[in-house]
Length: 423
Length: 88
Image (cartoon, rainbow over all chains, first blue to last red; front, top):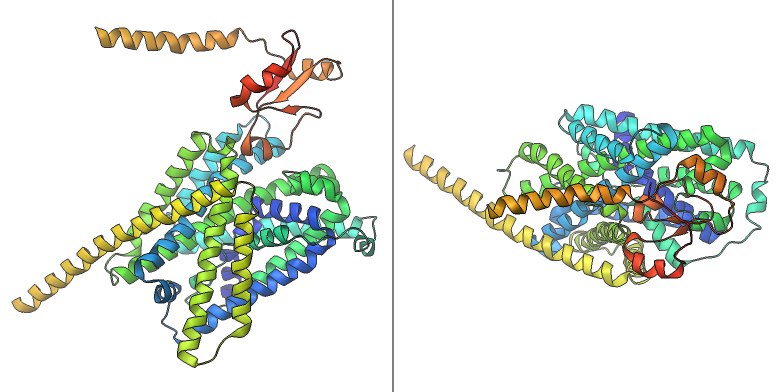
C-alpha cells in the first residue's frame, strides 16, 4: 500500500520538481510576497477537488477511463486530438527546455570544462535508454529522481528555516500583494499530475500529490522570501539558485544543482510515462486492443528524443519563442484537465442524478484561470497561434489515426469471419 | 564540371569563414577582469532565450544585445568604442 502510494506520488510529481516549477514559484513569491502561501493553499484545494471529481466519476463506473470520459462530451476524434495536443508538445518542449537548463547547471555548478550542450544531449540519451528497461526499473529510477530532488529541496528549506536570522512572523508584516496573473501561473506547478493509473489501476487519494506539492513549496517559498528580496526573486531568471546560494553558500548551489538535474530527470521520465500511458489508452480504445502498447513503447521514446535533439541542435533554446510555446503547451495540458472535470460533472449528473457543486465551482475557476493565463501573456498572439496550430495538427493526426485503426479493426474482423467459416 | 566548381566554391567559402572569424580580436577572461572598471568599455551579453536565462554567470553591468539585431544596437556605439561581446 505504502509502496503503491509512493510510486503514484513519484510518477505524478515529476513536473512539480522541475526547474521550471521552481522558477514559477520563485517569481510568484517575489511578486506576491507572503500572499503566495494562501494562494498556494487555495490551488492545492482546487486540484484536490478536481481530482476528487474525476475519481468520483470513475467510481460510478470503474471501467471508465479518462479517455472514454473525454470522448463522452467531445466525441472520439476531438477527445483524441485534445489528448495528443495536451501531452506530446508538453513532453517535447519540456524536454528541450529542461535539458538545456540542466546542461547549464551542470556546467556552471559541477564541471566547468564540460560543455553544457554535451551534458544536455548525454542526459537525453540516458533518459531515452532508461525507457527501454522494464517498468520496474523505470519506476525505481523515477522514485530515485523524485527522492533526490524533493530531499534536496527540503534539506535546503529546513536548513534555511533553522538558520535564518529574520523571524518568520516579520515576513507576514512585509508586502503581500494579490496578483491574479501570478496566482493563475501557480496552477502550472501541478501539471502532469496524473500518475495514479500506474499503480495497479487502483485509485489514489486525490489529496496526495497536491498536498506533497504544497508542503514542499510552502517551505521553499518561505525560506526564499526570508533569504532574498522580493524584487530580486521577481526579476531573477534562476530564483532557485539565488535563494540556494543565499541560504547555504556554495554547498547550497551544489545541492540545488543536484535538485535541478534530478528534477529534470523526474519531469521528463514522469511526462514520458504519462504520455505513453495516454497513447496506450487511446490505442487500446480505438483499435479494441489490437495495437499493443509494446509497439508504442519501442517507437515512442526515440521519436520524442529525436525531435527534442533536433530542437536543441537548431537553437530553439536560444529563442525567446520557446518560453511562449512551452507556456502554451502547459496551458493545453490544463485545458484537457478542465475538460476532463467537465466530463466528470456531466457523467456524475447523468449516472447519480446529483450535481457536484464544489467540483463545478473548481472547474469554473480552472477555466477562468486558463483564460487569464492566455490573455495576460504579453505574447498572447503567438501563444494563441501555437494553441490553435497544435489543436489543428493533433486533430488531423487523430483523424488519420482513426482512419488507420478502422482499417485495422475491419481487417481483423474479416479475418475472424473467414476463420469462423473455415471452422 | 559545373558541380565540381560549385563544390569547390562551397569549400572555399567554408574555409574563408573561420579565417574571417580569426580577424576578430578575442579577449581572455583574466584580461577582461582587469579591464572591468575601464570607463568606456562596454560589455555586451549576446546570449538569448534559455541560453541567457538558465545561466547563473552574468557579468555585472553587461548589456543584453540580441545577435540578430546587430544592425540596430551597433548604431548606438562609436566606431572606436571598445566592445566586448560574450555568448557563453
